[in-house]
Length: 72
Image: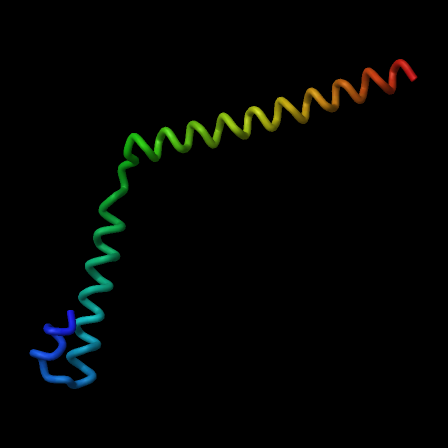
């Protein structure tokens, strides 16, 4: 990158132009990845599973509290 900037005129406009193209390339590369890969899908399933476990735990705690209250 330094070599590219050194070989160009060291004007502000040329540096801004290079920065613009680098940012545009990065944005294009990120936006091109719309389809989820296997690892991302697996991660989402794990996240959903953890949420389900947390919900089930909370429901179980509520049921136990209700049973304790009923027998108190």
